[in-house]
Length: 438
Ligand code: GLC
Image 1 (cartoon, rainbow, N blue to C red):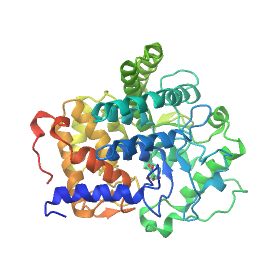
Image 2 (image 1 turned 180 degrees about the vertical axis):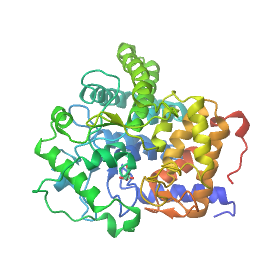
Image 3 (image 1 turned 90 degrees about the vertical axis):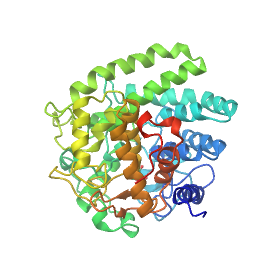
Image 4 (image 1 turned 30 degrees about the horizontal axis):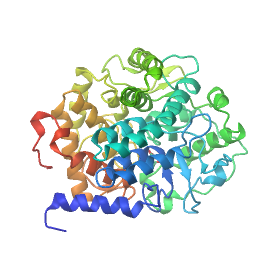
């Protein structure tokens, strides 16, 4: 500690990543999340890259070592079992080595690889790592665009709320309510409530439905096409789709850098299709905000969650969305609440139903910065800084009073601090270069 609060936080962020390091992968939070999570790992690598590039590349390579032969990259890799977490490898029973879950998560990997390559101090090592990862990234994207978009409609489908990374979002209430737990739902015991207060976690009824879907997928032996055909939960998630579109753009940039030109026309086709399909399917006509679409019910889900603002990350944000974001941010002391404060489902302390998530502030903030909306981006960055400075590297925060919630010593919160909040000026817009956190 040197008495400079920002430098202290940098050191503390490094300490969090080192403490969560299990040798080649980083757990999101000791206790609560004791394995390797897909999008956590990729984003955590951005934090590692700020002080140990070799370790950062290793994080992503360890994740891709668990890629399935068909290209899918699982949402959790169980490198070693831990009785403190449910559902663990025995419940998923995917029969993979290393053991993993049988569903995926938002594909941020290609974007993180590009980010790391472009900022690498050791360019030679970075190019070698990017070259090793490139075919694996391509295979994962190809899996999304074929298995999860079998008709080539320009959007990918999601079969479980956990695949969206925003597990308990109120956007999933209606499609989840249509999932009926079978009479033979296997009994189970949750472990999350041993770590975090029940009021900040999903309810029993929701958990029964999460497990109903897991049980179905297991019965289908994780056949990817059958999962799409048979899942009673089938949605088009704005976050997954915006992140994939962005990642396709980054994959194309990587292909250029690495001289992999032959694959460019295919990637560009994915991009063009998504650019046309996503606004058409997801944009709410009134506000322009992207909202999830329930394919089983055949309608857009009218809940206003921050997932829609990831359109900025995908390069498809517009002024109407920016105006909406501005008033949304103005309605709480700390931005950006995961659900609009004026939405009837807003719940300031419950998981994905209102709290601020530093990691989504980062992803939305980057999109805003890149589209020249630096004032709004600054609001997100400053609020993230203020929340972490007050409450530490927590999983999420109350948007009204800033209370830190969920897990502590959280990996991606520390990474977001290192890679974004406490970034050198070259990554910022012109009017915010020397902006101190509030
Ligand atoms: C929760 C979050 C998910 C995250 C995981 C580990 O399940 O909803 O997005 O990947 O925790 O942090």
